[in-house]
Length: 294
Ligand code: ADP
Ligand code: MG
Image (cartoon, rainbow, N blue to C red; front, top):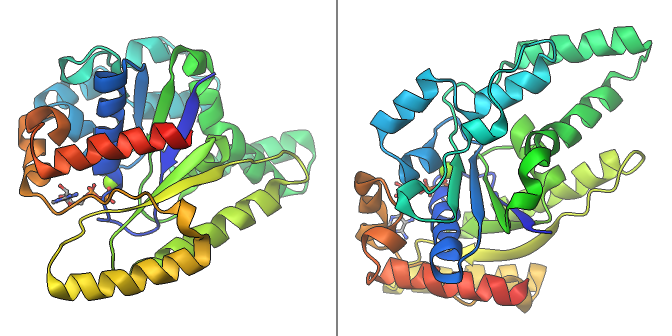
């Protein structure tokens, strides 16, 4: 069976999406793995890192985005015409093995979700709304992925910043999570916050099911070799090492590299658009480290 891996951090702009798409691409390109990327952020950065806005608009019009699959679960009496296989875009960036479920700027309506769960509580005669909500959250993305879970060696879940329904569902259904962080003092707080949330998530579900997600590691992203950052960086590293132990930090850091940011203009990740760049080399090395850890 393959691995489901979430990239998560409460903070935005720390390189979650960039990591997701480059890791996925390296796994497919350099190791021949079958990889699926799920864009769980309504900012659709992962989608637009792997396809052009024109293609995205076309698929969205055909309702071939994650929204449709979530809708099918939230509104069960909706007549399904599309299957998950119809929605998956195969060989994105022309790369065999690299597939994408496009995201959407509108992934779900919280009001509809609460109403549906409320109705369920009424029907079941259950008065523990929290338990019903928890159950829904725990199974949501698992249900979405169930028909194709065995078709992939890796399913990468690119989470939105914060801690919304889909992030919680992603964490509940993943085997591992990777935490990208910038080498800044406040990052330490972000890492601790997410760790605490995950501990709580496990706790609040333990009566009903075992959530056994583990941290695969922390990746320092957008690190800069200049003096000031260097000093801060050492402090941050020390704090993180104290808190999580040496083994949790990936030896490879992703440097600041303009090619990484520019890659989105070519609708493909940097490891395809500028394979020789420093950012690209770092992602290739990181992928190798990740596979060794697994
Ligand atoms: P997140 O998903 O955590 O919000 P992103 O991966 O979207 O973060 O990255 C935020 C911004 O930083 C994007 O514009 C991205 O292109 C840029 N970026 C990410 N990694 C690098 C890097 N190594 N060097 C330069 N720019 C980067
Ligand atoms: Mg992102």
